[in-house]
Length: 163
Image (tube, rainbow, N blue to C red):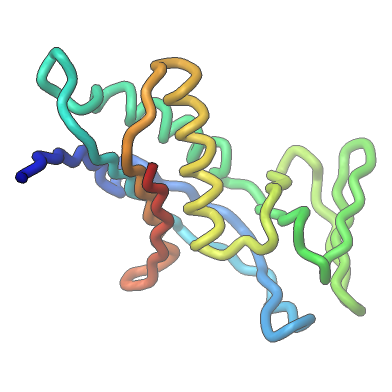
């Protein structure tokens, strides 16, 4: 039995965000503070609706762009990282890892509920928020949602949710 599936894709050039970050690796090692010009791609797969399309490109782009825009020109900080201490106070965020410490203006930071600000977990963060918006605003739940985050030419990570 054949099953037709369709795919809608939003190209990376519409979903750009430039952000600072650092990750911990190999236990408690912490890389230097740096940034990337991230590019994002979103794909959904499924069947056609009564209008003979999978989902509206314009709405999908608008929602995905609102998520990536919130990350643009910000310092990305993970609250789930056991090696980082993040303390918020009025107007600022203090971050420490072992003997290193940074202080950022609060308005320049996005505090993310992730373990590390890797491309993999940024893709998951974007995908989870996008799925929430699609469910809430469109009562739409694609059978497959895929988000790719590219942090440099040739370096990307993809998160996929299949229902």
